[in-house]
Length: 402
Image (cartoon, rainbow, N blue to C red; front, side, top):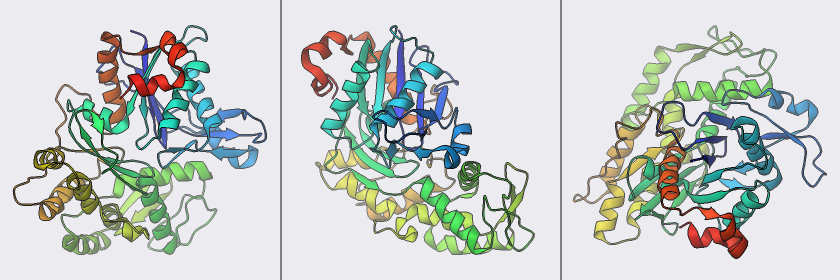
């Protein structure tokens, strides 16, 4: 079974073989979804991939001097198809090791909220540019539930630059009640940079003033500083038990600051920033956005439509996934506030990850679910074949992929 699973994320592309799986090594390709475009006037810009893995980025470090760094997927929307093609080409041929003319099948985890036209364009890209032997596609939210063995529930995907809340019923996403909050871990990193700058600490700057013995990442290039900031954000953000507890937790953190070492060896002191970022994750209004708090958005998505049994299924089958799913205290706080918002006969609950699933399932949930579905679809002979594509064209994806 030569099938590659590819998850199109705003920050990273995740790819790996659907078989043999599950194992602890997949997805074994996690590369930055970005490229350095050196000639933006060309129809198909020559591009070099910015990241060779999740922590790489040699080309991106020089992007400011040699070209324009482009992210083809922004907040879950495809904004540059040429660069996306270059990124996928790099993943399939350079990283996975496909040989041109001997391509296998592909299971694609499509971004949530993707349009019919975009689905068709992706299908066309895969067959006409990458010459696939077979193709199947499904929403990231649906695949995330497959990863934990479910067909029904509400997926809360906290990603790089957006948070998607998508109810799923019988293996089908319900876009009419789904919601997207325009912030994720990247926006929290930006807020942290602002908080540190207010204390005179500037990552990537040649000098900084920060008091209390703190020093900045003076030796870091812009891209490395960005990666360091993301890593720092993930390591310090935490959610208090309640909004009332947050003030006390912030005060305690300020009284006992922690020291963190950046990749260039410099140290930085963190005070109340971690707790404050946690509160911003719970309520995007603290980032200056006109959005509902996360618990309210989840409650609305899960209860705005459907009959009594459907609402119960959606609210009692919450899947918290994505890069922000591992934030300490997030799950407990979310359930606490959802229970206060929900009718007493409903008991909001988080989906558990089956014991047989690999570590990191929630972080890579869409990819993991894609690997599960790929094996089922392949065994049933339900991939879109070249003959199907020749007969139906790009619309084949609408006919054969729910």
